[in-house]
Image 1 (cartoon, rainbow, N blue to C red):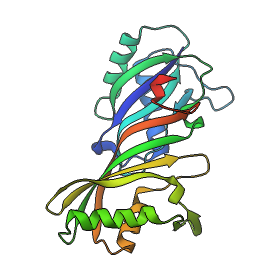
Image 2 (tube, helix red, strand yellow):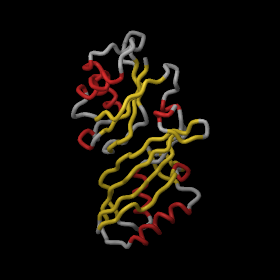
Image 3 (cartoon, rainbow, N blue to C red):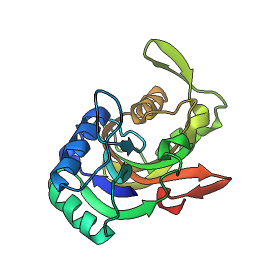
Image 4 (cartoon, one colour):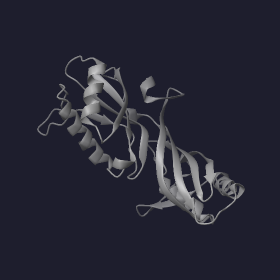
Length: 224
């Protein structure tokens, strides 16, 4: 039996790295006392497949992981055990049984929709902010330096726009493509804005929605 879990990683645990989060989830699954499957080999671990990684410091409101059971169990019973085991760490939004041979979530390209919460150093008018973002989109090629290498990232920006502005506080919608050939990071978008003269400081980001590209369709990981 394979279970797909939709969960929230709140701000309180947003500084847990991806690998540490996986370890935390493994420990939580052990606390449920359900009959989980383990990998084969000498160093056995819980058979667990994580969804797309979150950057350290990001909140995730639409995150996923898959795990496997040795027996059939009612989803309601599993949900209750998960909520208790993960209390104060992550929040369980929903569960779904999926076929054991379903592809892993990360085997697909994805569209990840983020809201970035930021603070301006100068009270720019909304038009000036929107014009700066437009200038980024008008570039056919954007190169950033990452890990000592130059990377072209323009193709990974799906959408970016000013979502809300109240005084110096703003919210930016930043939707990206996450593919096997690469992606773009939130902090790189900040550098693009600063490089065009916008004095802005990102506070934190929230991944609002995770979608995968499956057979020409944009779907939730719960839909396939």
